[in-house]
Amino acid sequence: YGPPEQYIMPQTTPRPPRGLLALLAAPFLWTTQNPDLFDSYTAGMLLFQMSLPQIRGIGGTKIVNSQLKSVSNDVEAWREQYGRNYDFSLLDRQNGAGWDLVCKLLAPKKSRISIAAAQGHRFFRPDGLSAVGLQPTGSKTLSRT
Image (cartoon, rainbow, N blue to C red; front, side, top):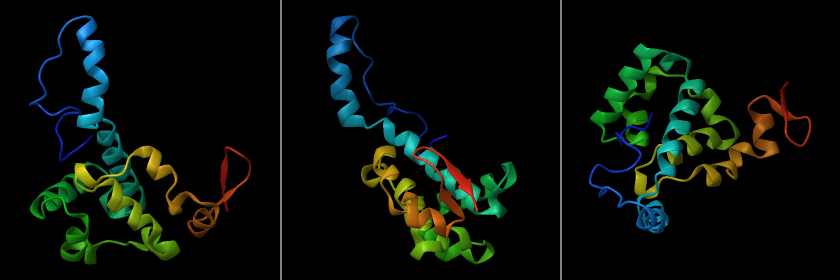
């Protein structure tokens, strides 16, 4: 899932050459096209859906996608225009850490953050986790409080 992009690589990307040339060209394509940001959008949409109960399910997702499209996929503009119908309390906790992360993950591709950058976001810091009802219990696990 990666709207507004339809594919991981733009359709204008030339077909790769065969053999060794393809191996040599791959790092260049990865650097210039940033296909990993496709996954960032997906993660942002999942966080968005988990945090806003009203958009869970196929019907809610379709409505939000059409609304986002109507505001050129600008999440801030979407919230201003359509947000009064939704409960943003989870995203607004910890001084809006969740909302900030969603905006950065759903931003246009040129300004979208990567998954690696998202992992360092304040939303995932221990103080941010406690604000959304999670407490660190070990080095790799979380438990709900």
